[in-house]
Image (cartoon, rainbow, N blue to C red; front, side, top):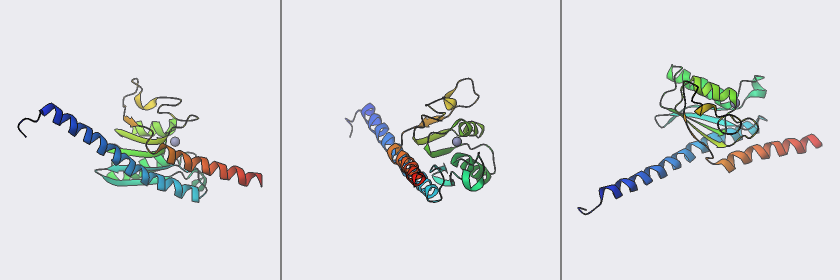
Length: 175
Ligand SMILES: [Zn+2]
């Protein structure tokens, strides 16, 4: 072991960390995906979100715009409110938000307000996304908070649940 190059060792452990981290993200995204599927079963646009704090899920929600007749009832908004109430603080420090679809401008605004340091999302939303698609609100240097973002985690699965939902809607609409 004495002839082990310490630099090489560091590099290996760094790579290992990266691998474990991405496995972790997929693990949590699967939770969010299950919530999205639950939304579809209840005839809501299937987007799911969870907030993880210290490796524990402290909030889980799906889009409930129809049921609550509330334009702000996106999965992220509900999850952020739940997480703040769980932590009894509006600052969601040391939390990661996982959401199956790239957040819209409203949700990106709430993410900034809550000071969440890390957001992981699945599919991109070319029509309303505010992380990379239409706006880059979470990394705008003019704002007082920025967060780390990771996109594309289980993107195909997250996107498929949405396209299947809208395909079914269209088929039913034609009958
Ligand atoms: Zn939103």
